[in-house]
Length: 279
Image (cartoon, rainbow, N blue to C red; front, side):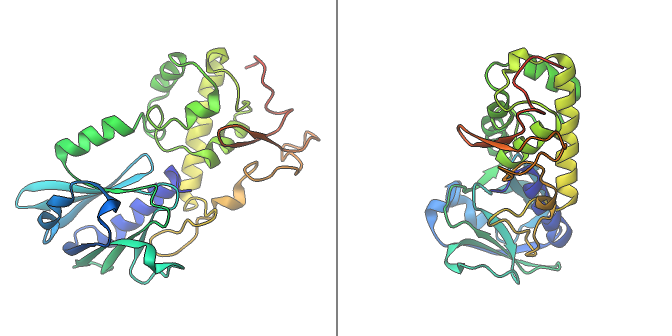
């Protein structure tokens, strides 16, 4: 499932290959893949791609035409991909949107989404602002440390679900929540209210480190993720706990990684990540 590092890798490739291109046509294969704004589709034809941004796990394409800026926002969801023309897909029938361009290296960007948990939205500036406010909390890459600590201090509940709550912290999913918590030596079920400030700061620094390292590796290609040019993310080779149930803890504490089944599978070391108040 694409998370923040994968979405950031997608945005960077599109920015490098298509920024400044003109959108000649936009073909929507099925109307239900567009969450809102389908009636405005004709406006985008002839517009210039001026901006590519990431919000949480979504990628927003900003188009300018006759002085106005509008957006096509693609939610990657569980199986959504944005792919260039030459990138092959196993099930081409699940390409639901095709954007054709001229003026840059790539001629086409396709939205492939077999399970359709994600959608596209066509938005003006006010619509994008409302979309961001409604769907996304703070961005874990840009939120200041002090603001992150205050945010945690104001919350209740278990730590891992909070990290994955998109309206609180946008972009972290199950893979990176597991990796961040292991490296920060915090149990997935630790109560947020029981965290000391030193642990909150350690969590913040670890979160930044893991996400930046994953972005540098192009994300993690687990199951179906590919970048627009078809390359796989290599951070999966650096996973320490995700999917490692039964393997020895990489900290060499002598215990094996366990799997805790709750809302989503949690992988943790019972020694290195004890659920008790310390640090």
